[in-house]
Amino acid sequence: MFTVEIAGIPIGIDNRYEAVVRRCRGWETAATPLFTVSASEEEMIRESGSPCPAAEVMCIYRNIALRMMEYDAFVMHAAVIDADGQGVAFAAKSGTGKTTRLLLWQQTLGSRVRPVNGDKPILRFTEDGLYAFDTPWRGKENLGGCARTPLKHVIFIERAGDVSVRKLEMDGIVPRLFRQVLVPKTPDQLGKFMDLMERFTEAVSFWLLKCDREQEDPEAIWSWVKSNELE
Image (cartoon, rainbow, N blue to C red; front, side, top):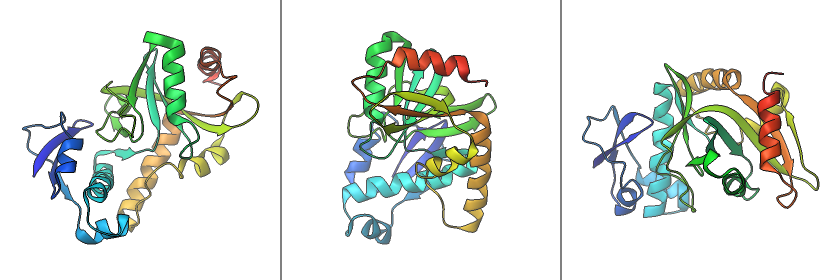
């Protein structure tokens, strides 16, 4: 068992496989954990068919995500950057281009962009507002490093022949959002989760980017988003 600090919360991890320790290397803390998670054999079997290191890594993070709701936080399947001091989350179906967007924007905007987390950031409401936090669960490219950023925009990505971006209304936000967050199953957790989702949709701007990487201009898209965010 060991303790890590994620999104400002010390968390105890009661593990059985060394893979979890390796995943969390560099995140350890001597602070007293506010809660402790583990992965049961039954959970790991449901995850991958048998208890194994990879299943424990995934189950541990799922259980962290569920407990994080007690601290006004949740996990979103997204790649997050800090662009000019603002947090931008790219969300899409797996294989659609979250990581591609992160790398393309970093390549184009240079030092104006810092990667926060490439796959599963924690989004947490603090006294200062909503922040996206880096976590040890960064995806296979292990993209991250910026500890946190004030999250201002969520950009849903869809592939298309032409490039376009538009601001989404609630009827366009909800179905896309609920595909990218972990929805709890117990009534108590579901009530808290729905409260967080309501706060989330009020706290940030949501956009739909239809794109083709070969034609995409991150500089133009980012300028347009910033100039139209209050509309």
